[in-house]
Image (tube, rainbow, N blue to C red):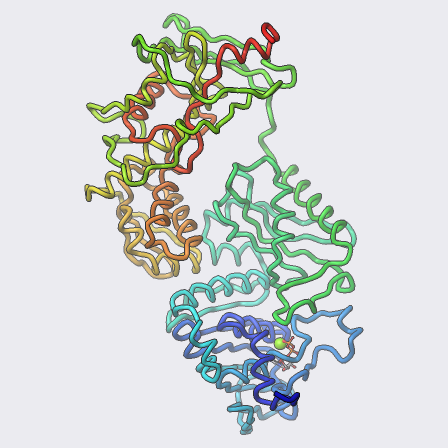
Length: 623
Ligand SMILES: Nc1ncnc2c1ncn2[C@@H]1O[C@H](COP(=O)(O)OP(=O)(O)OP(=O)(O)O)[C@@H](O)[C@H]1O
Ligand SMILES: [Mg+2]
C-alpha cells in the first residue's frame, strides 16, 4: 500500500480512540470542562450505562456564540495559548481535543449561553458537520452525547454491559464530586438520582452525602503544609480500614488522577498501624506547584509526572504520619502480665523470659486441660530449622495439602464457638494431639500444646476460620436455612456500592442476606447469614460487597468460594483475643471435626510443631 494521508474522518476517529475509551471518559471530559468553566452546579445524567445518552449540564461561563463551532475543532482551546502556559496550568483541560473526539464517535448536541450575551447557541454536530441555531437559554452549557461508538463498531462490540458501565460511572461521579466540594454535583442513572452533593465547599459534608455517617465519622482531617507541598482532606483512622483500595481518593491540584504510586505512599505512612490485607481510606488533595507537574503524559490526563518525585513522596509520607500521630489517642503501652484465671481455680500464670535476646517478653496462660490421652506417637509436623528465629518450616507436603474442595461434609457448628453435639473426628488430624496438654495461649493468638518431646502451636484465627468455612460451605450445599431474621435496620451505602449490590442481589441472597430497597441508596436489611454474631452490623455486608467488587464473575465457583472464605475470615476469632479454657476446648473439638483441618481456607497452616530437639539446638545443649 502506498503512503497516503488519512482522510479527516478516519484520522479523527483514530485520535478520538485515545481520549474516549468508554462512556465514563466522555463524562470525565465534559465534567472537567464544566469545572473549568467555573460552574457551581453540575448535573450529569445517563441512560443505558451512557451507551444511549449522556448529558452534562452546568451553570458555568457558557461558550460565546462566535466560538462555539471552534470548540469542536481539534486543538482548539481557550485554556492555553503556548506551550509555556502548561507550566502555570490552572485548568483541567488544555489539549483542545475532548469535544472533537467525542463528536467523532457519537452524536453531540450543545445548548450554551454566555452571561455576556443575550442569545445563546444550539449546536448539533453530526458526522463532523456543525449546525448552529441562535436561541436563548439560561447561562451555562448543556451537552448531550447520544449513541456513543455508533460509527466505530469494534469499540461498540467490546463495551461492557450497561449495569457495569453505570456502576463505573457512579464511581467516577463520586470521584469527581469529591474533587470539588465547592460544586454541587448530581448524577441521575436511568431517571433515578443516585448522587447529590451539597456544593457548600465543605469536604466533610460532601463525604457525608456520599458515604453516610459511619464513614464520615471515622475520619480525621489533614491540613499539612511543607513547601512546595500542601495536603488537605481526610484520612481514615487506622482502625477504620477496608479490604480493598476502593476508598482511597487522591487528587493533585483538585484533578482526579489514577496514580497508584501516591496512594501507596500514603498507605505506607500508615505503616504497621493497620491489619494485614486491610487498607486505609483517605480523601486527600495534594497541592503541588504546576511547574513541578507534567500532566501531558497521556491523552486521558489521568496520569501525571512529578518533578523531584522522591522528595514529594517523602513529604507526603511525613504529612500523613504526623497527622496520624497527632491524632492517636491511645498510646502504645508495654504489655503487662495479667492473671486470666484466679489462683483458687488452681490455674497458674507464668511469665517466660524472652526466648531469644531480641524478642519481646511474652506471656503464657496455663490452662488445666488435657486434650487426648492415647498411646501412640504423633505424626511429623514441620520442623523449625532457623537459627536464632523461631520460624517453623511450612513445606511438609503431607500436612499442608491444598484444600480439597470436593469434600466439604463436616458436622456443623451451631454458632461461632460451640461444637456440634456429636462431632465426628478427623483421626488423621486428631493424632497430632495425642500425648499433649493444652498449656495455654501465647500472645492471645496461638494455643500452645506440650507433648513429651515437642510442642504444637495452633493459630486460633486460622483454626476458627477453617471451622466456619466448612460449616458454612456445608450449610450452603445442603440448602439448610442460612438466614436469621433481625430487627430491620436501614443501611445507607455509597452510590457505587449500592449499584453493585443491586447488580448482585442474587449473590447476597444465596449467602443468607435479605433486604429491600429503601430509596436514596439505602437498603432495609431484614435478614443476615445465620452465623453473623453482630446481627445489626452492616460491616459483613460491606466487606462482602468489596469482595464482589474485586471479582469479575462472582457466579464462578472459585469466586463464590472466595466470598464464603471472606465471611469465615470476618467472623472467625481474631488474633489478640483472649480465649477461655472452654472456648479453646470447643475450638479444638470443632477443628478435629473438620474434613481438612490442616490449613485455613487460604492455605495458611493452622498447626506448627517444634521439637524438643530444635529447642536444645537453639540453646546449644546439642550441636
Ligand atoms: N461546559 C463548558 N463551558 C464553557 N466552555 C466550554 C465548555 N466545554 C467546552 N468549552 C470550551 O470549548 C473548548 C474546547 O473544549 P475541549 O474539551 O475540547 O478542550 P479543552 O478543555 O480546552 O482541552 P482538553 O481536550 O484537554 O479537554 C474549551 O477550551 C472551552 O473553551
Ligand atoms: Mg476539555
